[in-house]
Image (cartoon, rainbow, N blue to C red; front, side, top):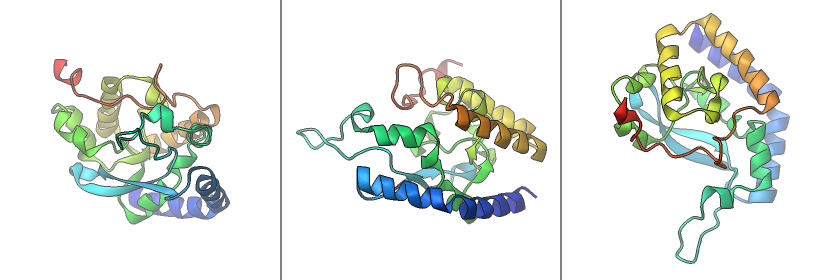
Length: 200
């Protein structure tokens, strides 16, 4: 039932949001250049890799040595606006249609984080990742990694269709209020090193 709901809702969502998708793509192309889409390999169900789609929100500016500048230097006002209203997440509806992810589930993070999780945190990969999840509606990027992972595991242990509907509703409210986008003192999400996790 969850897959049927994902496929139906994401297909309808793509149709309804098509003007927003096209408009955002034009803005990204004009303000940030090509490519319009940011693609990155992320871990899916059981850690299997897939290509995640997002709208680009940062430039490719580099220093004199050819290394990318820090995120806060490359995140433009346009990128901040796109992130504020979660417009960068809309292309992930294509991932849902493909079956890579679900509408609701733990957020797909970086591949290199897999080796940093402890046994309990690794349970977040027992379900498909999602565009939104229990951690996103309970703090999003404003809470610590450990808190996020614990919320993810709670979802795995308590998932249900009713809970998914509740999370989708709460997500809409959070997006409209633009809550929890960044960690305090950070322009983007602080990198997970696993140091704190190993102390648990």
